[in-house]
Image (cartoon, rainbow, N blue to C red; front, side, top):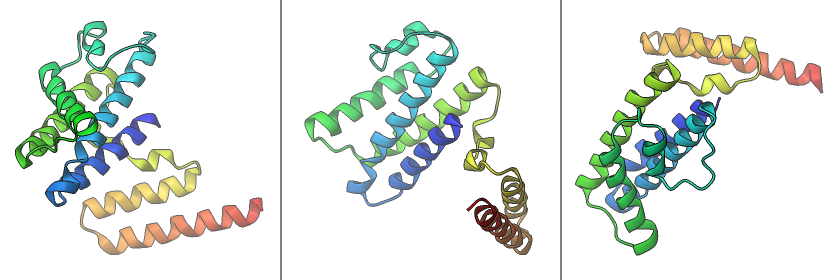
Length: 168
């Protein structure tokens, strides 16, 4: 579930990075926060106490993490925005987007044995029948079967409403 939340924050950063340059600058904060959440989760998984870690300390304590220098640069861009008020260039924003994507693609599979691309917010849905319809809908959308996708979203919504009414 936490990986789904991390991916959601990453996707917020992706959307921000496509906006006008001033708004896109803040994507770096979302990218950094999503990576930091991942690092905290990984430290917990490995039973490493990380309460007092600086961002780059994770690479010392977990040497199998990749892209340390790229993450050092991302951290420097974050510090520039947050603490110095220096906005990054379009190139820096693009580098941050690419490096963050690479970080997740490399490290999620290496440490959690799942593809980053396969993580979905659907995993956060509590009702199994709703989740089932949403997965069918997503698969249908990926296969360009728009009608089937819409039908299953509607069914998921109906199941959710019925569950709410029954439990009320």
